[in-house]
Length: 150
Image 1: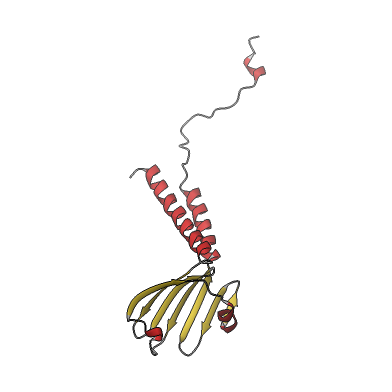
Image 2: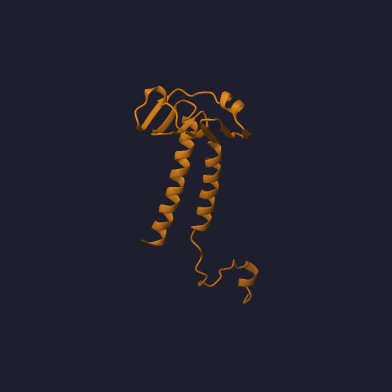
């Protein structure tokens, strides 16, 4: 694969991830999307109201009569005020909470978007075409120097 094609594939992937993150961030204010896995534990990942949430719950009765295995849902966004007040640690949208059943971690969606902006900038800088350095230098000629013969 040529250098130019490889460069644009890498740049395209970085821009795709940045776009995907931005769409998830903006879209999370209109819809909550959750994926969970139910076995002896309940593991949930959600994008909701500007945050990405991960939770792990230890064995207990399965809630909502959910079937075992993978499931997903979507609904209107919720408010993080309750989770923020119950969190053990919180800082600029990051939270960590623990109770007797498990734990929950939330990451504000501006953070992965910010990291991807930095990554895209870095990739763009590192994959740009570098000069070969083999050409002779070209300088602008002054009009006075050209008329030496007179």
